[in-house]
Image (cartoon, rainbow, N blue to C red; front, side, top):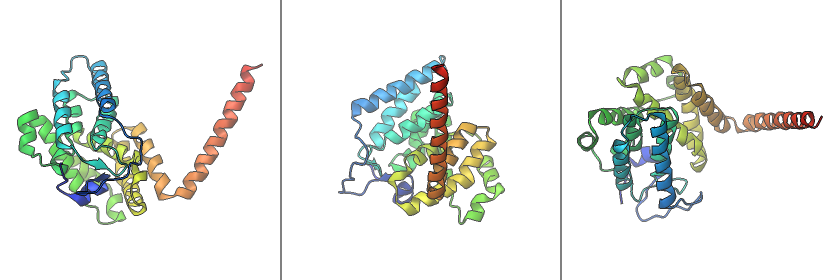
Length: 254
């Protein structure tokens, strides 16, 4: 069974692989057939978005991903491979190329499995290896306090330290999926990750013109930073939605 090189960092990202311990299943288990079906759906979306792209690289990256993350589980109880798959689905929605999708599938391989950067480069080329290395470097950045996280120069640093914007896009997709599944972590980790998301990653998405991603990151972070206010806002929005639905229904019957 593959184990994480950095167990603390892996736990922060929602991966749990304690030797000899079985994580309770917190979400409905996906069968391997269901996971493979979702991967085939990913390929179809890439081909629809970019008909001239060769998806052979993506399929090869998926096989590598499945092999190297075998036995690893997330805090939700899901097989770990669901995470890189969902990250790549987000990238496909952005209509990124096959190189970016392959790197999305491999983005945690160097940090969380015995795979090396040299192995990634030998198997997938220097572009994929460069992107994966860039994502790994971002993962290793430690923000000492909230003032550091809020600083504009931190966001500038994140953009300056990468020579390929696909590194940042993969990191944003990675953070988006982690936020979507944040409920499975401990409360202290939830708030810390949510604040980091609100301070760094949501503004970064805004700077790149990714309004939809920024909005979802902010909404998800708000839920954990101020849950009481979040529930009030959610209730108010739902009330207005129901009022609107009733109005539309009444209008149609006229």
